Length: 160
Length: 160
Figure 1 (cartoon, helix red, strand yellow):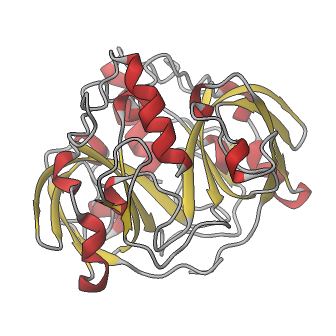
Figure 2: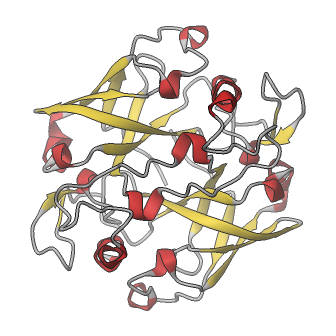
């Protein structure tokens, strides 16, 4: 189960503390560069409005099993959080695809550090992947879609 | 970027052809066994209604960059599909958590083969992850949430 780098993420976030609390929902633009030898895999990607992006969390600590989100102050298991420290350092972002040109994708909503190693891209399907009724009980408001105020906490957790 | 197995998926699907076309939406139950040394990472997981599950696609072909979904008959880049063949053989499922007991999770909606190697679990947050307006243009109906008829095609693609 070895991974290969298939590209690199160019983002405005040079240091971990540069990533804004609401990076997932910020207007910042990132560019995903897919290495030329994998560019064929992008055929028809321009028809997808949103994408799952998997990348490597090179600053994460794979030995940690508990995480304390900054705005929660309680320890949770890493599998109940989006902490960048977890046994397998794979990050999952959902982004809006703004443009696809050759082997480069312009996207909004990534919270990756500049230079992060790209692992995979998958199309987001509303019918399969949008679950508005999902809830996270340990979040103050259950992580509800309707309550936008909770986003900052969620984002903060992601930044941890 | 080496991965460690953190558990194993017990599913009713023993062969690839056993996985139903609508496995993601089927009522079949799977059990996720997290190895004891990682069980601490499950703290508070019972408060999450839905989870992202990452697992290894051991039957996938990492040399393929194009995929032809069975009910589409056109070739697309693997990054525009959910084909199990892609450069990094990481699968992404979204499941409903039915029960969490010790190091075992009972879930609905997985389409993993029995014995698949578990890589990661992340909580699904409606506010972050539910994007009902997402579209996939190469699907007949754009992969729209409202048109349930398209699910079979989407599922078929996943089964590919």
